Image (cartoon, rainbow, N blue to C red; front, side):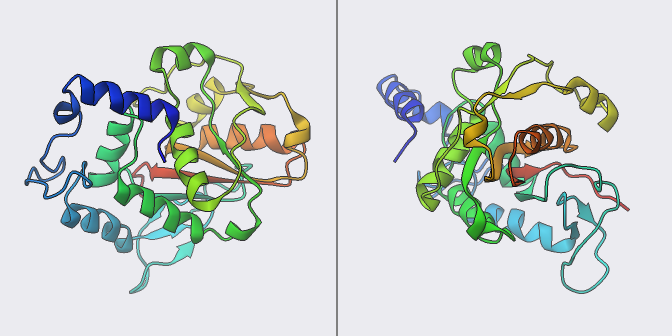
Length: 255
């Protein structure tokens, strides 16, 4: 089942003959022809390569940043740079590269996740340390000004797809973005990002937050500043735990 915005988008695109422009029949990564419309973004080999790439690294057990591999198989260990973050842990479907990067870019122009990414999202959720304890999914909200300019929120599309597969409720009401912060620019360091987000989020329905184990959902996690600010706000409002799940994690390899 498609999100109502996604369904309307596809109906308009198909009626206008724009589907072939939105979803070209070549792999966005290697440019080989796609064999099926269900693939949409990338060929099976590029998806396989994208997923397998994470096995070349260890990962931080809290923030999911990449670390140099110390042993033969990938391990979870601490990066030592995220101890002060307020969320319990963060996980991503993969690094912001290849098929996942192209999927995230596509999501900015079309409210739809490919079947491959939908399955990867579910698999990543099922591997969360607290998957069985999650109470609800909470998409990162947009400020109303940004929502109007984009017409839809990518995080809501992701949460809707995951909610359909897990049967978890989606809480897209309790948290609002009170400050219309400027988009994070390339080159902004962690401190600058954190300062730009100070008090940017507010809870307006504490009763839906209190004692809940909340999974915050978004498209990309870069430095973790947004996840940290949201988690702190939710915990102050009474949430029991806050975890993060994104489609992609920015490629930063901590030494």
